[in-house]
Amino acid sequence: MATQADLKKIGREGFGILEPILEKRRNTSQSGGDNMAKRFPMEEVMDSNQAAKLLQGVSITDYRLSRKGSQKAR
Image 1 (cartoon, one colour):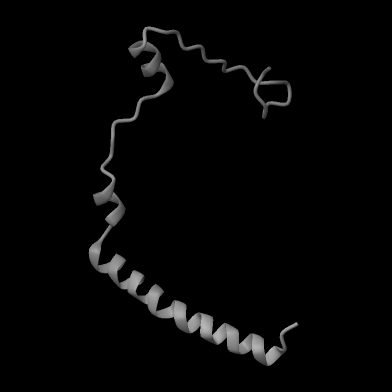
Image 2 (cartoon, rainbow, N blue to C red):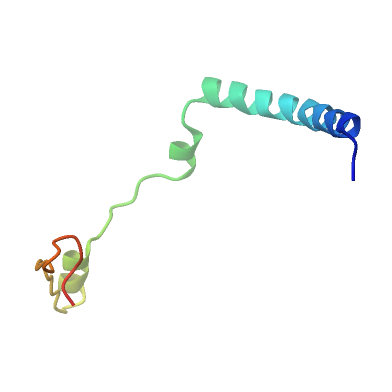
């Protein structure tokens, strides 16, 4: 098992490696804005009712609650 001094040394080395990488990520995300929105443009979302109409099917929604009120009916 590693001694306390060894664990401290390992921790310092690990954070020494990670800090520059994380600092680069912080700087690029602040200056570049929201990169995820640029990479993945929003698509129109289809709900189950729209899908049923498109595929000429039927959508059945059960709004009943069980006696407890927090679980769906079976």
